[in-house]
Image: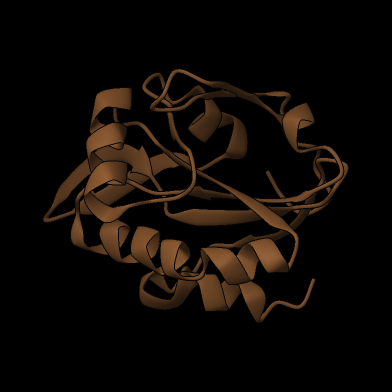
Amino acid sequence: MKTGDKIPELLGVDANGNQWKASDFAGSKLIIYFYPKDNTPGCTAEACSLAEGYGKLQAAGYKLLGVSKDSAASHQRFADKYNLPFPLIADTDTSLNQAFGVWREKKMAGRTYMGTVRTTFIIDEQGVVLHVIDKVNTKDSANQILALDL
């Protein structure tokens, strides 16, 4: 998924069992951020930064969804632990990760495996990707988005 692409209609199910679709956000700007795993240092820093900046993001007209391949139960514990005010989609089959092109080969400690590449997508009111952040500042991601001035 790149700038100018239309996002898929079906986005997935959150920790509360709610089905999310692109059309649910028609007329609003949307941030979809993909992260590797609940309760890991970088992912926690990113989620907390977005939670802290949530009011500013909303004031700027954004809605927000987080996505990882963790289960709905894991997302619920993560959201409860850090008081996250936005839905987290449980993409357990990685279909949304794959649709957005963030499910890729990764390497760590000499091991090669498939995983989520941390990426944030800014989507316009018509469901079209406006901007892609592939070098996410996990500790200041809300301000990184707000500084784009889209």
